[in-house]
Amino acid sequence: MSSEQVTTGAIELRYTLTSDDLRDGVAAQQRGIWRRGLVALLTVPPLLGLAEGFVRLEVWELPADAVSIIVVASLLLALVIVGFSVLLYRLLLLLVYRWQARLILRGNPWLSQPIQTTVTDTGVHVSNATGESRSSWSQYPLYHESDQSFVLLASRGLGAMALVLPKRGLVGEDAARLRAVLDTHCHRRSRS
Image 1 (spheres, rainbow, N blue to C red):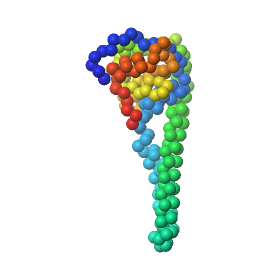
Image 2 (cartoon, rainbow, N blue to C red):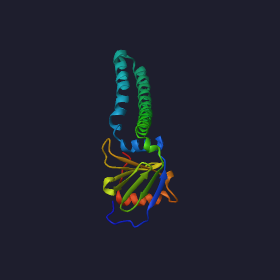
Image 3 (cartoon, rainbow, N blue to C red):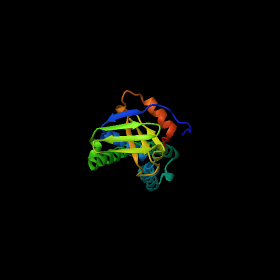
Image 4 (cartoon, one colour):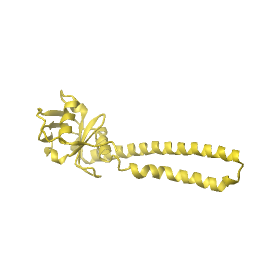
């Protein structure tokens, strides 16, 4: 975050939020939270089962050439288990994020109305038919950029407030200008 102020004009966005936009917001908000334990949870039980199979087969009593074949096959099986666990992890996260985004949209029907957002040096102004909100940059110290949107975050914690700004909503602007304003006022959240 730079101490100098960017002196650019207002950046306008006009959009209607979709569940995909909100999925980006949920994913940015929860980035890295599930990673620590979920891959281990998906990987360790099959590997323990493999180890139990070795004990039951009494591998140490087999001839040397058979043991080497079993060890190589087991290592390949362990790699397959880890790869499958990572794929399953990604699929589970995709399903959880999609489910959470749909719940948010269902519980907040005003999110489905057309929204106009103005980003300036002083903060973010969001308005739609039911109301408006003004936020200073101190409320959103972090942001995350995905292929489809910028997500402003209130903190790194689970359940922190998030504001999704879809790139498709930029009115006559390019994403580089918005990115420059965000880089000036917010810290880019790492991809951890």
